[in-house]
Length: 97
Image 1 (tube, helix red, strand yellow):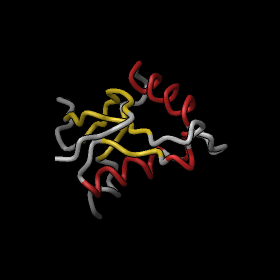
Image 2: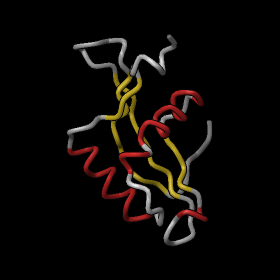
Image 3: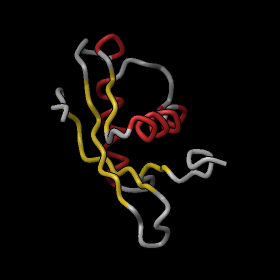
């Protein structure tokens, strides 16, 4: 069983940060798919690419602009194997390193 299948990568559910993420996501997206159905795929994509953000592309945004949702990755003291994605905020641009 690989790390993705073990639920090692998780969003910071049940926090103010996650509530802010939900609000920001729904403010910009025009999809009718509830965020609940997308979160596993979003976290999996960030884990596989090694990025701490994902992009909502312009064609799926209400304002037809790209939107980036940025996270900080933490290791909780209770379980150091878990990678917890904590929402930091929204940006219109990301500077690639």
